[in-house]
Amino acid sequence: MVKPRGSRILVDLLAYINPLLFLCIQTHDMEGIYIGMNLDFGSKVYWSPSSAITSHIFIVGPSGSGKSVALSTLSYRVVEKFKPVLTVFDAKAEYHNLFKASDLKLNEFNPLRTPLPLCFCDDSKTSFEQNVTTFLKVFSKIYGISPSLYRAMYEGIMYICRRCESVERLYDIAEGLEALNDIAEIFEVYPTKDLNHMKSILNGNTVINLRDVFLRSTALSSFIIYYIVDNILRNSSLSFSSIPQRVIVLDELWHVTPYIIDELTQILARYSRGYGISFFMATQNIDDVGVHADVVTSSSALLLAMASPVHGYWNKMAKYLNLSRRGIDRAVKLDRQGECVVRMYPYENPMFIYVDPLDS
Ligand SMILES: Nc1ncnc2c1ncn2[C@@H]1O[C@H](COP(=O)(O)OP(=O)(O)OP(=O)(O)O)[C@@H](O)[C@H]1O
Ligand SMILES: [Mg+2]
Image 1 (tube, helix red, strand yellow):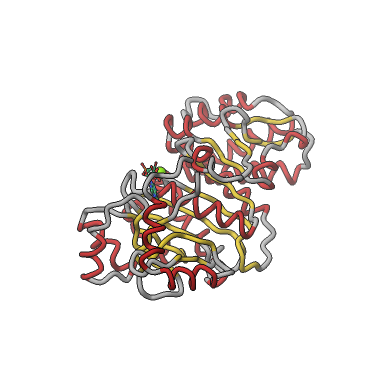
Image 2 (tube, helix red, strand yellow):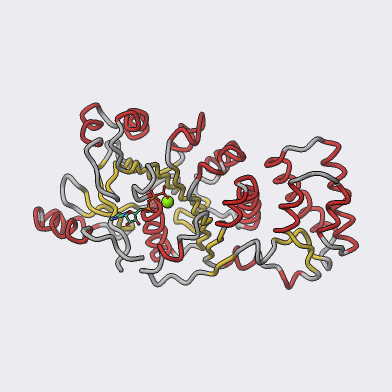
């Protein structure tokens, strides 16, 4: 990533104005990751995921305000410090570029080029059942199917897997079900478990390129995200860990919320207490998470509201940020990309921060 011009000048200027504070805080926080500059005190601000009961991050802000830059910056710094496995759902194919300034090694996974496994022909019956049940759980959540179609699909897919037939045979099970056109393109029946590409997502830092899928259908993109997240959660060893073991970056959250917001909020709440799984999410408007705004914001140890000149936006965000009337008047004046109001657990008061992005 080419570091946006002016950011270094701002950081240097703040350090110049208040060098003592800058030095103190800079050298103190050994536990945390660097976020950026406190706009009031000129001090460096750190966030320590291990000191919170949850380590999810939620970023809200208008288009172009710096959400993706903030997500990539924070996730890189968490990966660098705590070495979790990173999975990025990249709806705009921009994350390779955003991480360019870092030394992060990332696999790329594109489900249109490397289909996801529906099942493996050499697998056990129990594994078939497990795979098909997961597939149908996600399928019925996204596309909504009747119990009788569910049963027919279950039997049909089990038949295909047992006989090691092509996914195209899905069309025979539910003729005219349009969603199957999409599904047949991103799933495959693999002859052997050795071809389990999901392993590379489970074990290594991966950017999942969803751009073409996302442009075609947000339902399909949501399907892939939910399916992969479900696999990740099922394969994680849920031992207690106060530091992030796995970071899942979910940018453009708005596009999945119509399909899976209730599942997602359950996941956020369930994995908030010490399981080492962190979701780093961003969306344009708090309304994107609808009635779940309370759960999503309270499950997030770090809440960032990026700059916006719109009063209504801050009025809505105020209660989640503990932002006073005066705070709102101040927030409206933030106008640079990367500037934001932050509520960081366990601090009660919001902070005005400039997110210092990765170096070029
Ligand atoms: N912290 C920052 N400091 C300086 N410039 C920044 C910062 N964050 C973002 N920018 C600039 O703003 C541009 C837009 O940022 P970004 O893509 O992160 O916005 P966004 O909120 O994700 O937008 P969208 O909702 O359209 O995805 C970047 O390309 C960069 O030039
Ligand atoms: Mg973005």
